[in-house]
Length: 158
Image 1: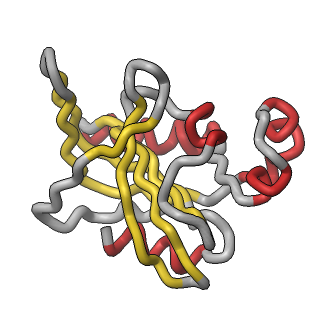
Image 2 (image 1 turned 180 degrees about the horizontal axis):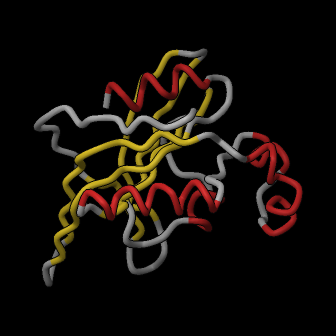
């Protein structure tokens, strides 16, 4: 949690983003994820916002505060996770000067198997961190988080 909040603080006033790597265990009635490492990413939104913004129904204000993980970066993270025997179990990002609640754009781009951690950053200070998951109706619901150890951060070029 501290590492995600530090990344959010360092990127403020822009959104930070990164991937959560670990293991996912699916049972008939629940999914349990164990975070083993964070994979911080560059926010590629500025380079990609023209074509992506046209494909989304995000308002211009919302679109100005978005994150985008470049496909090659996602591929590299996936490749690294596989070398460790891990999966990508989720995505984290920040909401500068906004609450840690998913936006409509977050919902539209979300994948149901991932957890989505959002950290609120108020004037450069992280103050709330929540995890969300899509339900069967494609709506976000709060997801409980249990912290038991410090996860390493994978060194990337951010």
